[in-house]
Image 1 (cartoon, helix red, strand yellow):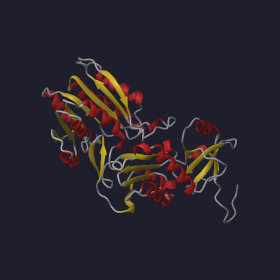
Image 2 (cartoon, protein in one colour):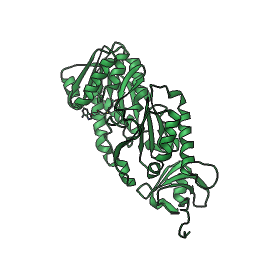
Image 3 (cartoon, rainbow, N blue to C red):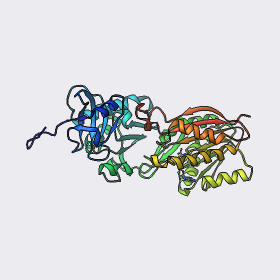
Image 4 (cartoon, rainbow, N blue to C red):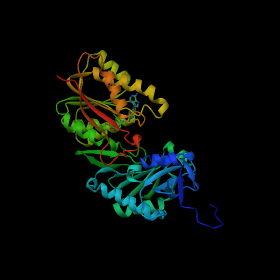
Length: 399
Ligand code: SAH
């Protein structure tokens, strides 16, 4: 197909036969070699067809590494204009979470592929919306996205937390900037009755680990009367939940003094007593705990992603195994270990196997009590395995 000067950019691309098969089975990501017809540049919203011209829904093209990301079904034939598309998808994503939109709540409103919006994340922290875009199509549609969200949700402030490496592949700059309204440095949210301070411009991720809400809820339920170790605590989200649930004490361990200061401030703001902060490497801390014979009734182990790529899975696996073994060894009889991994590349079955290996050879039995993951505001696209990135296991050493 050739285009004369001024002709519109063709709005369809065709996948090769093999890629079409994957697409029909729900795989959402495709590379340059998978595309058999149509232009990838400029990045835009297109209709996607299989090798026989049959409809595969809409997609975002890119001149970068990820040449095509599928964006789900859409009626009709061509591609809608970006305003129509983004408004419809955003409206649906917000409607799906309408039960989680109390004025003080934190919630993820848009979770990429699972909401038919590849390369877009939107988190809400009370009056602040924080948006993360890793697609040039999303970036080019901010003029449609931001006003819609502001109008629909009455946000006072919209921040782009685009300091993520994935943007490089799309030729987009890493940046953090205010997209709308006034600059709010710290937003207050309430979760399971505990107030947390979220820093949209500087906090980890988009400001807070929203994905661990179910796990913090469980910790709150289990904590009464227990001594709690919150390892890799960051700003003490788990410690505050535990103390609010009646923990006897909580010890937050992190290598960041700044994160620990935020944890201490959070406890004070909530009127919670019993928090100790320890600035240390968790591996060293656990060794010392063990050597001094100290035990805990509830240990939370929430390390950063050890495997940032597939290549790193082997080394990361060793790290998870050792860490989990050390953590199991400090459990008092009856004690719980809540163990987590947020590595996309460490799949659920692999994580369980690592934890099983960590428990092997211990002089006591370990029971798997519960499996958890991110909350319902972080839906998983079943056919996109990496999207189930957060795996959480609740283990217990029986009395
Ligand atoms: N549990 C937290 C999130 C943890 S993020 C929550 O629910 O909010 C991971 C944290 O691990 C970061 O704060 C980082 O400073 C810390 N960290 C990374 N490696 C560490 C190490 N070896 N020892 C101690 N802390 C570490």
